[in-house]
Image 1 (cartoon, rainbow, N blue to C red):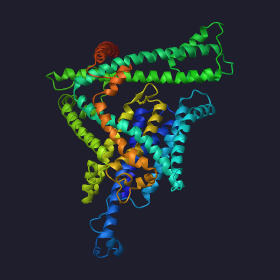
Image 2: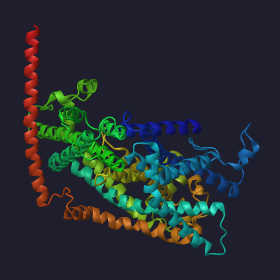
Image 3: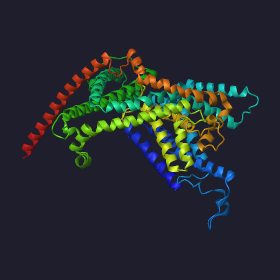
Image 4: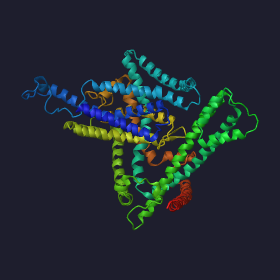
Length: 600
């Protein structure tokens, strides 16, 4: 049964990672190495999260066997049972359904952990620079990637050498290969924990609050208007930037003749341009005179190639996001009209925009959609928000008290120890899985939501660029190991923090003894997570959003005058787009009727 459980988890996690990659990336157009690196990084991180509860239940079973072997009298074996096994394993220590045999998990964790670390610290940063490079050959892209990552790798080396010198300064410690591994793991986990607490402090407040506020259609509609106004500005800027870049490309296209040595580079750039611009450039070259333009250099073409890739990608993203926001705004306005309508089914303004599949035809019918949107949705979202709020409070309390083992103050440790006394492995695994899943949702959803200017932005509907996909993979690989270690500390199964004499999980054992760097295990790992409390207060009062507003990065704040102006602007933009779409749909209907009668 344990082998089947492990196999099912491995397959399900792979399908989950593949679905997310298909949703955010473009499986047909993006480079295979980019997709493979992102898929592998996401897959390994999700695998750690799903397998760790099995490691916890297996460790608790081994601890039970060890305790009863040392302190309990032997149990009379049943007829036909193995004498040695029956005398060493009492009845209370029933093997969990998901028990994983000795030797499997340590090898599994080593392979998963070191592969993810190789991806996040070496391969993915290199592939990021490789994918963004404007060079025209593989050798040129590799050279660019190595130069851009020289400082990056040098920083890691400096941190590692600093920790190495700290250990070498203590003569009682002998630097073995195992201790060197521990120093590297500690350095990586310290960096990850630093970022983890920042993201977790935001997610613990924002996720429950977002569900509570989303229960109100009025709030959702106002926020959608706000996003529409912002996206209109970004869309106009992206279109203007693309037009400027295409002018540069057109000038180069006219300057470099077909017998020139740089013509292959120009043709490569042209293939990255939108089709309408390619056709326009072709017509302009045919009608152009003998006017000679300044010939570009190879380095100039490399920079132009990089600008074209970025401009085209950004233009495509804004177009798709604009279309999605329009559909959301139209839907929310239709829901607002249906709430005051005596007819109990949702009437869409543009039925042709909705897919008429079998789900909408037989299951999610207009009547069912009306009851969900107008009756059930608000109560469900608010109940979910309350449950998430309670989980957030439990996490904050436990993060501030998990170092206390006598008495046990961490709520997660209390739940696990209660289930451990009853040897209820199903309950242990479910509690671990729900807890880790909630922590991951708080952290990973923040990773998917944050946006660093135009360099990092995860956009659904296959619009995420290669750089952002790989950056998210790097973040996942750096955040997941410290997140799992932090969770093991919350349930008092990390002896480096709880200082308890008990069997360690296989996951903790590969991390090495954190006592080698006591100022980290006894200081940073214990006290730094308490910062979550301050971050939660800052998020609750929107201090970060208000600071970004002051810096010119507009955020949705309900009591802000600028937000109200942008909401009004977005409402007017939606009215214009609704009129445009209505005219286009009416024109299409008239053409259809005309064609229908002409055929008759």
